[in-house]
Amino acid sequence: MPKQIYYLHMEQQDKQTTTRWWTRFASKAVASHDEIEPSIAHLRAALEDWLALRGAWEGPLFVPVNKGGRLGRRRMTEQAVYGILHKRATEAGVDDLSPHDLRRTYVGDLLDRGADIATVQKLAGHADVSTTARYDRRGGAARRAAADLLHVPYARRRP
Image (cartoon, rainbow, N blue to C red; front, side, top):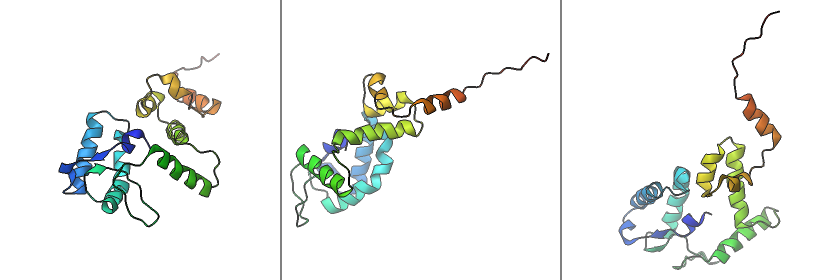
């Protein structure tokens, strides 16, 4: 979960409707050129479902849920987020998963699906494209495919 989402806060004026909250969230993301801006449409359904459970009270957007299903009123700790991730990884049979692995997968998946590295750099919030390049797992086949996109107009001479 990007820290930008982790640190979101419900404000008093957002309490009337989730639609109002969503509009404010989306406009803040767009206005700040936040890395989550292109993803907000995909997040909407999940966030609306969470807000229906959470309620519209002022406070941290993401709060702990105890074993009885009762929601807390304080922000989840980073350790709690890590604990949830570790639990889900164990259930999925994945060893040694960290929050940064999610970031690495996010960047790698975008590159694998053909997003250009400059765009991915901005989405990841990397200051230098060489940082983004370290996440690139495509290898030589991707470079050959990219080279194949180039058309060099040439008509062969006839002997």
